Amino acid sequence: MPLLPARLLLLATLCLPLAARAFSVTNHESLTRAAVDEALAAEGTSPLAEYREAMVSGTRKEDLNLHVKWTGWTHFFRPGTSLDTTFRKDSSARIQALWQEVEEAASHGDLERAYDRVGHLVHHIQDMAVPMHVVPVMHTLSDRFEQHPIGQKALAQPSARVLEPMSGEEAQVSLALETLVVVRSDVLAVEGGTIPWSAFWAEPTQEGPGEFGAYGTVGNAFDTPQVTWRGRTWAVDPAAYEAFVTARARAAVDYSRAFLIWATRRVTALDQARAQLARPRWIPPPALALELMGGAVTSFQGLSPVAGARALIPLPWTFGLSASYARTLGGPLAAGVGGSWTLALRSPPLLTARLGYAKGLDLRATAGAGLSSVGGALHPELPVGLRLHTQWGQRLSLSMEAQYRAFAPSAAPWAQGVTFTVGTGFTWGDN
Image 1 (tube, rainbow, N blue to C red):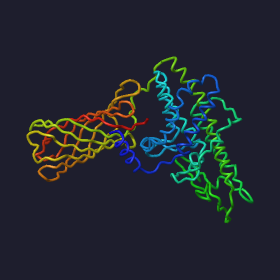
Image 2 (cartoon, one colour):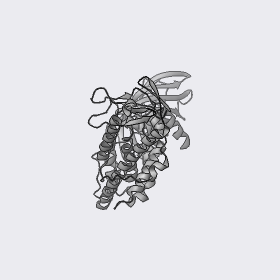
Image 3 (cartoon, rainbow, N blue to C red):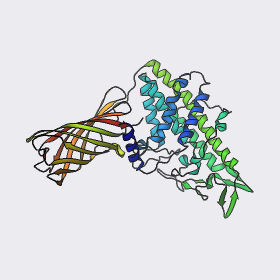
């Protein structure tokens, strides 16, 4: 079962607009491994060796969890201004939220999760070495800078620059400012002259919250052998692009290393103190889920068992969407009764409760539109209800729902009654 739901959920997620990303997924993995290797030379960082793969996995998942991106945070950040949108907050908010999760996990002795979240956070620091993410420029997977692989030689030699250990927020701001300086003042050497990097990525024409720049006058031309600028076509040596990518990758490793040293010492201190820090309330993460469900309809007409399936899809502002199908399996009026379809909006959590530090329950209201098949005809209905939901581990969800279907035909087993169901299945949360 897990493989098919995973593919279906991934396909559903990809129907959303394409996410802007920074370095490719494999580039992020390489940068993180290099940063860990270099950070291990510092005092008090030995846990990095044990949890290396947890961090690399976290770095990778921060790009692949598309439903988290599109319901909560972007990967853009510009020092001195907010890039929050109507639906999502910018990268700085994600860094703050992730560090709270690191501290919470470490204080409970869950170092595997703590370093996984460190890996997620490192991803956002590395993004600050990418011009499109700090200028910033909205882009797609066709961006040519992102398509350029980072050569292993670029990461083979440690940097001569030594940065003091710093928090994630400090590393983000510092690296973003450094990248902006490069775009504003450095140039690309071409045959017979130079082209400023600002011709590739142009900053916003006016400063203000949510303001984005755009590709410069040369367009999305990074890595192309010829660039048209100021009415002339200029030949570019591929080595010039390679040197630029290497410098940006080197900066990403330097600041990642500085953060990892700082983070490891803080995680170790929290683990030893075991003060068990906890956020004031449970905040359910956005999650995709595909569940099988079963239960019963209770009404004046009797009791009828039901079975079916439902999909849960996260939306911005902590709303959610639920699509389900259920069918009665027996009972006094089962003859001629088909199934019922429901598409419902889930409210933000009405109530939440903790189940340990990293798990919890959330209660939400649901309302939507439904269709039922009774006597060979389709009948519109108005389903409303309450749903209790929790996530166990990284891949299992459990939910319970009580649903009333207004305007149900009188021959339906659920007419003037309530359907109680329990569902469980595959889930893909903020892993």
